[in-house]
Every structure is written in structure tokens, then in C-alpha cells.
Image 1: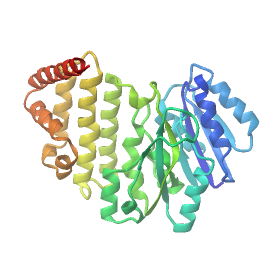
Image 2: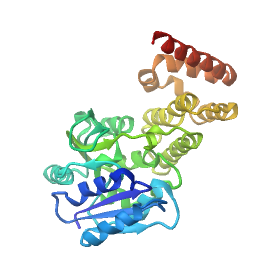
Image 3: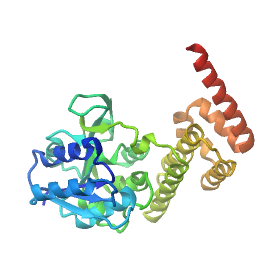
Image 4: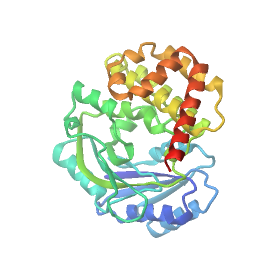
Length: 342
């Protein structure tokens, strides 16, 4: 088997989202591949939709029904346990791909000897192959036989996991799998996978369509989602310690952790969670200081975190109370100005 594509599915039957994704998968131009669709205990008609595709394409479509909701990481792990392909790919069940997506990636791997291949993606709010906002998922200078400089760049700017394929050894020759029962599971393990690769190639074209809608993970901000992001960052550090690359890539790992665990969590929580808890915000800052005491001196922190955010973070590090008061006043002032300008 050349390729295994794993599709975690949870409540995606409405508006034809799941069918549109699956249609793009079953009509791939590549031969010798399998689709492993894992229903994560959906409460809608998603499993029935999957079973219909399994009946129609028995030679390449396998359905796994999880008896419990394990989130995307758990669903992906169930799929990995059954994957037979030399290559492994993933797709979110509300997205879709060009007909030659996997053929192009596999051909690139064959031509170059790469063991990890990716491409760009398009953000879109409508179905079809009309190109929306193009997101350059990686950089040409990250490609080729990987060395320390390229590994550092990939840790800092890894790009999305779903627009890549991986040789199975990168994933399955190691005991660790996705963390379960949380979101942001990709962030937790992506560094380990990239640092196991020896040769990365990249097609600078948007072959993957990332569907933007209100129920997608990135558009939903809750305290639980913030806690999931924090846990994913903790797993990322545990992986770095376990596989021995924390010290070698300390500045890059520190920067990645700071962004995932702290900066993105702090500001998304403050902006998106209605009932803000002093204890949560205080504990977030305390754990950040305990994990990486010198994070504000990291060169990437100074380069990559906006100046205004750095000022707010410095305030948070000194006093959670004053930070929350100031942030609330600042947010209220900006909302007033926005309404006044109208």
C-alpha cells in the first residue's frame, strides 16, 4: 500500500461538508491508496455518511467507529493503528483537496528522495477550487537535506500537518502518538516528526482548501480550548525532553512554547472568553515563568511578538491584577473608538 489518508470525523454531516471532503478524497488521481475515516462518536449522521462511502468504495475506504469521543488526536491514533501505507497523510473532514494533491506530493518525494513533503493551502469560505487567500505553509529555504539551520527554521515555522505527507517510519517507528481528549494535538507532536525527517520538500502551490466557518476549532474560543492549547505545549516540551532535542534547539523550542502556551492563550482568552478568571490568568503567567524564566530575553520573542503585546506581557509578569484592569480599559476604549468612527 502506497498511501494511507486518515480522516478524523466529528459531526460534519450538515450542509454537505463531510461529503464534499470525501468526494475530493475518493477521486484522487493517485493509485494504491486507502482512506481511513474515523468517526469520533458523532451525534449526527456522520457515521451513516461514512458507511455509505465504505459500501461504495470497499477497495479503498475503511470506517472506524470510536466508542467514545477522544477528540481529533484520539481519532487519528485509531487510524494510525490500522494504516498500511508507506506514506501517511491527514485531512480535516471539513476541508478538501485538488484531485492531484497526493499524486503531486508523492511524485515530489519520488523525484527528490524526501521523507516529508508539503505544499501551500488556500483559505476559503465557499466550496469549489477557486483560490482564496493563499497561506505559504513553508519556505523554499527549509527544503532539501535537513541540517541544524533548517531544523531551527522548521521548529519556528513548521506549517500545517494536514498539508504534508510523511514516510510511515517517521511516525510509526516511535511509541508516541497524538495526545487525546484535547484540541491542538498537532502542535504537540509536530516538532518530533520534523526532527526525525532527513529530507523535506515543498510545492509552493495551494493544493489544499482550508474551509473557514464558524464552528471550526480556530474560530471557537473557550477556557477549555485555552487549556487544551496549554496542554499541547506541555506535551511538546515532554517530547523534546524524551527525544533529546530540547538543549540543542533550546531557543527555538522556548519560542514555540512561549507562542503556543502563553502569548496565543493569553490574548485569545482575554479577547474571546466573556467571563475572565483572575486565577486562570495568574496561573498562566506563573507557569510560563517557571517553565522558561528568561523567555522575554529570547531573540525570537523580541523579533516575533508585537511590541504592544510585549508591553502588556511585561505588565502581566509584574501584576496580574493591573494587567487585567488595564486590558479591560484598553479594550473598552478601542470598542468605543470603533463605534464612534461609525
